Image 1 (cartoon, helix red, strand yellow):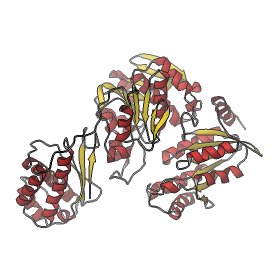
Image 2: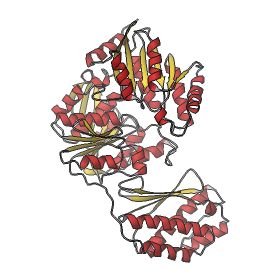
Image 3: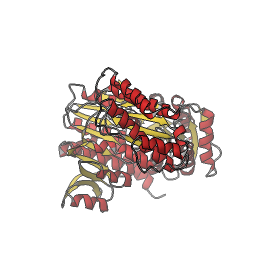
Image 4: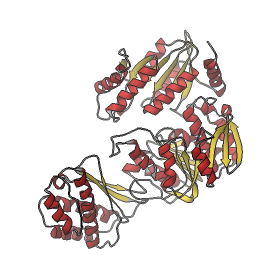
Length: 563
């Protein structure tokens, strides 16, 4: 069904690999006697064939297909080959992976394995099919090797479901405070010393390659997304510091990842290639992320909002490090010693500790900076000077004051692309809302999310805010129609009794409609992804100004004041 050449470490191997997705329906539906005969021909004993299209049959086919790959490889001249074959949610579909050093012959091996499986399903002779496949692989001219880059400068690799962009931006900012020439790759593009040099989604291997190929870069930060790992592999052989922010439901149902546990396995590839003398910075408050300390050779550096976390005690007792919050201070723990870095009220991104997710992002960034050898003073300065605005963190928790005839209005703009992200955004909106004010939300999502997730977004929005308006992301419908998106988001809202959800063709149009009906005590939020610059431009045309740290602090104090 698919042959994909992965250029670097991936879900299956810590180096470049070929991944095949194969349809084995005929073998999955074959008579048990026929399958046992095939297994015997491959030298397999005690194969429990199972009933057609059963779970046991799928497990038997994992062994059979593994043996086919190894036999074709052996007869073509490859004496040792790691092979991993995995079952999928479909009883007649398998994923096959093996590492490679020669691109052309690796592709040929994948293609010829499929030829053998096709031939077996057509009743062909196993020996003849394998002999022909092996000859085809041997006759394939040699090709180039993997493009995986061996880092020449310190590299911090950041992954996770939520917060990875903000955290990687903060780490890059801290490194620049320390005087480094910093290269950073992300879903937004490739940046060098804060300047965008290559726009586009560079959260895959090409982003790491772009950053590390630039001679002026002496410190690198890479944002590593799920899609990049699955579709292309990681572009580097190793990293010095890895950061995993959290793992929550997102992009499920794509590329064979159907559960949060499977998603965690994908994210775990990043710490699994961290150097032995490096550090794996892991969220101790997220069980799936915490479990990744078992797959890394690196030393664990945990971060947690809870200083009494049992996980912190365990890792500190074993010689690791931790960063937490004690009496309102970001504090680094090592052994029995503690180092108070900076008060949360002096870290603008945390909104005085109000933003739970950004407290975690700040803890992660501080840990990563120190783990990468950046000076303590530079880490503190970076945390103090990094702000939730379009300059430092575009598209993530950006606050604006918008002048209107009714008074100054607060507008919050964030990606909020999944359930946890939306809940975090609403939490922030509530934390800056004046007493008696309302929450108005521009709701939207990309089209490749599952029906269940889209309905959940509609439910959260309707349950936790006062006014909801859908703003469509026309560039990111990804196969769905506007009508489908409306129906799913509204279905979620109807679960909590909200039926009057307006719909607009763009994110900007939904924001304009909400601003028109908002009062000075209200907070308007926009889930913005497709039209970030258009929204910035429109807000600027109204005379809107980004909120300073002092203004944000004032908003938080006013929101917390008794009615």
